[in-house]
Length: 131
Image (cartoon, rainbow, N blue to C red; front, side, top):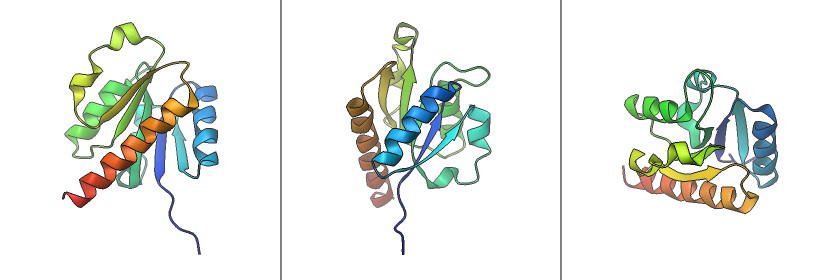
């Protein structure tokens, strides 16, 4: 009998980044799903089961910021970790809302990402108990 592991979605157009994050999260006992675009994630049937979203800010098509805004507009706010190679362009991400639990600059350390994931899980469980 297996216990359900927390589902974390990784949205990044860079395959090597997606796979590296997925490998790290799975090694830490999380269930990780990867998506190469925001549109792919929006078509994912288990969006509501996602407890944390890790997304690149700068992607072709819909950006990570646009994805976050779309989810909020759809009533599917998910604790989100934003990642970027261009931090100077994205300095105002903290104004996006309490569900942004981190904004990391590539390359970032594994521990920093895991700390953000733990914050997201705490945020997610508070939201469930507060509903």
